[in-house]
Length: 97
Image 1 (cartoon, rainbow, N blue to C red):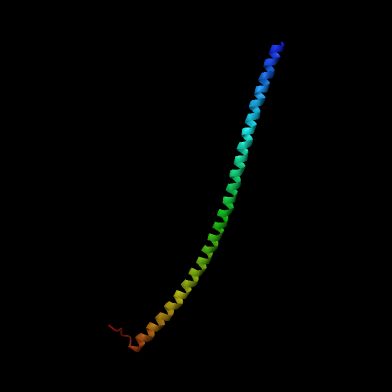
Image 2 (image 1 turned 135 degrees about the vertical axis):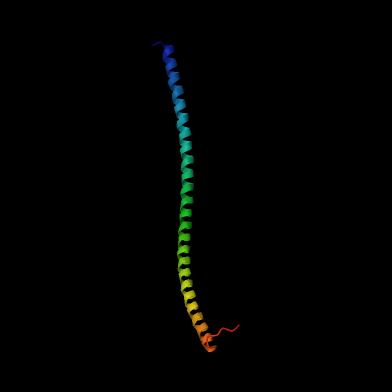
């Protein structure tokens, strides 16, 4: 190989190395941005998980309160039926019109 050929090969290698180094730097920047986005997504996910957990607790509480309300309504219906029976017995089974 002549000195000129060696020089061209060395320049080619140097250019390829510079191109590779630029590509690596772009990859590092891209990776850093991706890590930042992932971190934000993780934070959002934790927040969403906490909200869903709270909604689940509120739903459970609502279910319990609805059951209590249904029991109270049944009790009220029975007492109202008893009162109606007492009133009707007092009128000899006749409703007032």
